[in-house]
Image (cartoon, rainbow, N blue to C red; front, side, top):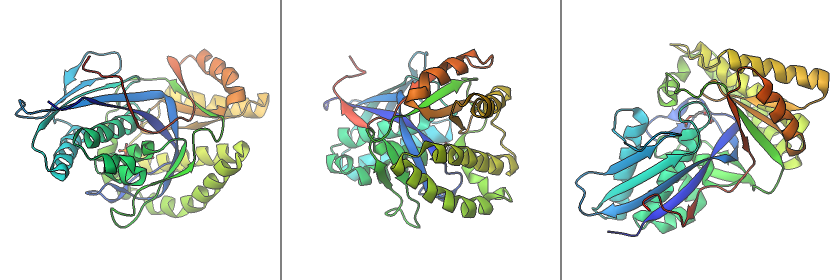
Length: 341
Ligand code: PMV
């Protein structure tokens, strides 16, 4: 038996999102994208090599559930087993791996659970198979995470505000840090309106993105927005950043809703919050902006100084079941704590 390795990874929220891929085998996103890490939404993964196992054993504990053995029945699960196989081969070792992994927030509901899961799992696999140099070099770590099939997870390789650059080859598609977690007191309050699993996984959605007549238009029109977003983060210019975040959400969902078959992730709670935020800005001078991923739940971005007011208002909305408070934080890292204890 090897030593136990444990990693912890935050989720991240994309201010400029990616939808669709340039290369589906290498998981290279269609466009550059920018995100912020989320301190309140984490995955912890422990891994140990075991010579006595005939097949890899992955036990998953989803939010408020018991441990279950992961079967390769979904695309994401199959991608994870392929990632284990790939990393084992790279290490030259033969031993199978036993993994335990836990999320502290609902999975597959547009809160970025695959981002934290795949980043924690890849980091744990690299460390347990003795590939420390691939883990220590965060640019290389981001490439390794991408190969597990979730490009959003790549952005959790680094802390704070991170850009995932697209490229025409695997070498070029990696992360760069725009600013670290101490740069800016920005907050993401997730308004959970529906914690149930989404019906269509992002892996399936990406494959059909280019069936939308607006897919190419988005790739062109988001180019100036990503430059402006990077600049607004560096300059800590919130009143410029907020509208850019909302514009990008609307742009990505326009593609989702017009692809074949259409993907409509918004529900009544989503729209209710979108309307409320507009009203608060216009009538009450409360500045908060929405960002929505592949699910109905709404990430509400505001300055820390306004967070208590925004969170109290969100908790009064009849659709909101609970809220999750997030600040920028460090990217994936090793911890002492073990899930095998
Ligand atoms: O990489 P995936 O399969 O987790 O795709 C996620 C894509 C969005 O969350 C919808 C947008 C993004 O950039 O995070």
